[in-house]
Image (cartoon, rainbow, N blue to C red; front, side, top):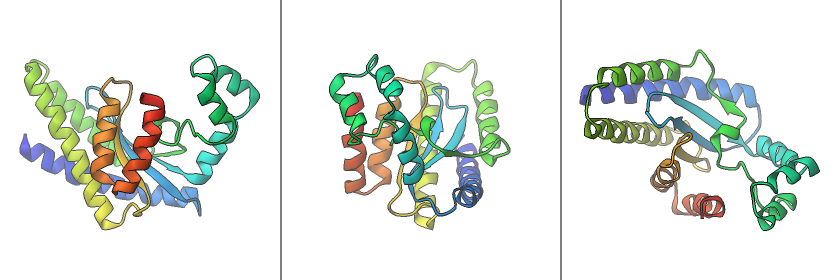
Length: 200
């Protein structure tokens, strides 16, 4: 299993390097502020999400439209909706599913996802403890890949990096732990302050 994760780490780094080259061409002179590697609760998929200040500003403006604010009032307290309306809070600053840029359908991360799926199939009859260990090793592998990519300069120092898990109760815990590890104390403080608005 250790060999599998060592190879996976290399594959993740290579795939992200290639995807970041494509994304930079696509976004032109926009300024990246956030990057996330996103998996699912079974840890069989992995994709890269990136957002820029310019793309976020467009999204925030759309969130300030009267119809959108009326819809938000069905889910969020009036105080928070008011902060969205006045621009002091961004709903999607650290929500990778809402971000403007992602790896494509022909991404190397699709091949990584296939490897993860195949490995999970091989462990289908294994007990919960083995599945938990697989998940822990996978998240550590993704974090190590992210750290290496940051050290190489694939992500600028000002980019807030973290790992996310879509549609899972563990998501906020995984995001928090990875954001703490992958960023400066100041960046982590910004991330945590934003997360606390929504996660309590």
